[in-house]
Length: 525
Image (cartoon, rainbow, N blue to C red; front, side, top):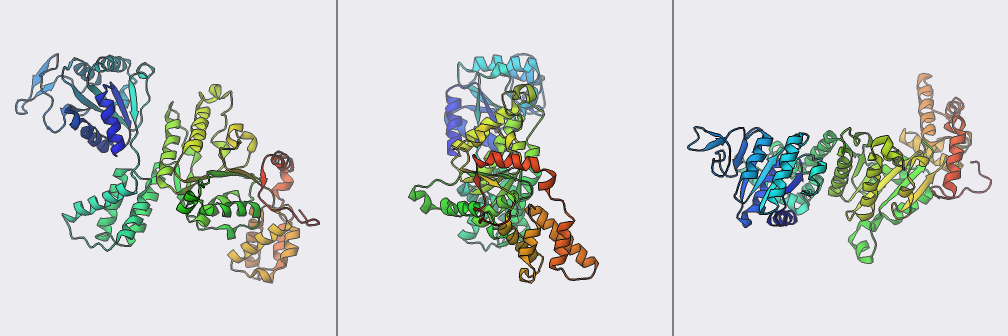
């Protein structure tokens, strides 16, 4: 907050003509502008299409003094309302002729910059304001800068609240609600810190609403508040789209095989701690897990978060693209901001290639260059970010990935997940049977693993499920023979898409680290 205040002060005091605050937190933005203007002794005015121009701190509309054109007297205790001051072009004309130094907040003005008359007026006003301390501050959830205004505008970003600020919000909410009802709070500092941690990633206004609802529901700050606010945050992120909280209940024990990948991740587990930072370690940036479909890539991404005891958020790539120019890039920047606000966390990007499809040299003709700009933003964030966000990305079609993405220094490592070998298939069958309340020791796992040669992990799972259905229908126990029969009925992906899998293996041989340990000589593939 102090950094934002200081930046606003500098921009206003240095006669920046137009400042844009892109945010959904309009009230917070207005408070910040007022706070930045106060020590500069500048008046603050607000404009909206509903109210016209009003001076902050007054319920009266702006007086006629200093404004040109016609006005009409209203019955507001001597105040004079500007004629058509609710019209954006007319309001800008009024500001242009105003002689006093002041700050003018224009709310939701993004809706009006498609009008060429408004853009011309805004440009005229901006050029005139640059000569003295008069600044227009535009607040909007999103703002696309017209080409005519690019040299006149500065952007200010409202950061998500950190843990100390969230603790303040919790205290403020409790004090406010405590004035109208009796609250029974039993959380100590550790509990309050846990509540604040679970609010990370939300805006100040969202955090205020989440904690307010939790306090009203429980009549105070109690142990259940910790999970209440987490549930509220999950719901808010789900409704906002793009990011989704995922239950990370799995750990590495849920994965059969992939010993190289498991060992690599185990080495980096403690790199988030203070001791690791003091030792000189940087938190791991991320990993790309590519390979054959159905071989556990997504399970690995979930297991990373479960093993490291970190929140797992999934990036819904389908929601990031927008038909409006500039909106897609802003959405992906929002994803980065929220992920950093949730840190330390694991950011799971499933099917990474879908995000950057078409980001090659011809992307300008395909999608107006959107994919290339998204790639540039992502690479910049991966390179420069300071927050501990581990990116676990999965990929099926590596040929669709731009080469810049897999270059060393972006992700820490690139692992290739092949079809499980015989030892891994045996482990996978044991895990699947145990998950279904069966004792793996009662089955001939070696025979089953051999019969499942060239089956993926997902196909093994499906075969066990099919065998269970068959056993249940025949009112017989699940046996080795039942599973063997289910395997015999299945045509694996390795048969129907053999050429694709072989091409992927050839590509990965010289470019990726095998996720599995080397196969013992003489063992079936």
